[in-house]
Image (tube, rainbow, N blue to C red):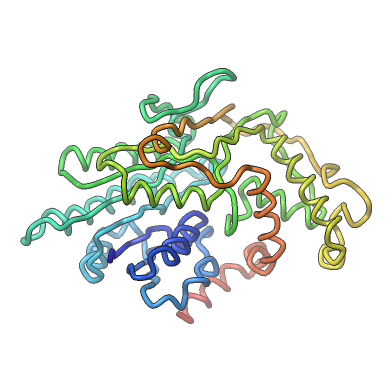
Length: 368
C-alpha cells in the first residue's frame, strides 16, 4: 500500500491520474492538493469522491510548512507533482504566476519533501518524488529534425517552458545533491476528458457546438505530437513503479499533426457524430451541421502568437524499450472518444464557461 500526494490533482492530467490510480490501486491512499485556481475543478474529481482512500485538501504548493505538515500527517511516501501553470498564452501576458507556481512552488515542494523524508530524526523513509513536465522545455524542431530525446539540450522559448525547465533542473538537483529519490517525465501535447476549454481541442469542440469561430494561429502549420491523456497517466504509472531513480522518461503519442490538420480532423469528427445522432441537433442548434454546413466552415486564421514554436516531436524509445510503454490510442480513436465525452458531459464544461463558475467552485469546496 502506498500513500500518494497528487499536487494539481483537480487539473486536467492530474484528475485523470487520480481516477486511474484509484481504479488500478484501490488500496492506496490518495491525497489531492490543489489551490483551485482557474483551471482546478472539483467536478473533475467527482468520480473518486466516494473512494474510501481519497482526500482532497485545498492548498498551495508554495506553502512549504503546510505541505510538510500534510506529508507527515498522511505519512506520504510518493509525491506525483502535476501542479503548474501551463497555458503558453497566459505565460506571455502574465509570466509572474508561472514563476511563482512552477519554480518557487516546485522548490518549496522539494524542500518540504526533503525535510520530511531525509532530514527527520528517524531513518530516511522509502519514497519517490515524480515530477511531470513537458516537451516544450526542449524548444522547437525543424521539419526533418529527430524527435526530442532525454539527452536533447534544453532551449525553452516562452515564460511557461522556461519555468518548467527550471523546475526540471531543480528536481534533478535535489536528487544529485541531497539524494532525494526522484523521477521526471516529459510529455507531448495531451488531450482527452476533463481538459480545460482554453486548450486547442476542447476549445474547438465547444466553439463548434455553439457555432462560434475556430481560431487557428498563423497558417496553422505548427506541428505537435499528440498523446491521449489515459495513455499518459499509464506511462507515469510505469515510470513510478519501474523507472530508474534520478532518470527522465519522454512520453509521446507517436502522432505528429499540424494544428490546422487537427482542427480539420476534429471538424470532420463532429460532422460524423451529428450525422449519426439526430438528437444532437436539438441540444446544439447553432452547430453548423444542424443547418447543413460543414463544421470546417467555422475555421478562422488569426494572427500568430509571439515566439510560437514551430514543431515538437517526442522520441519515446526509452520508455518503450525499458518499461514496455506504447500508446493504446491512435489519434483518430482518441479524438472520437474526446468528442463523445464532451457531448456526454456538457454540464461539466458549461459550468466552466458560465460567469458563475468561480462561485460554483467555492460552493463545491464549502460542501466538502
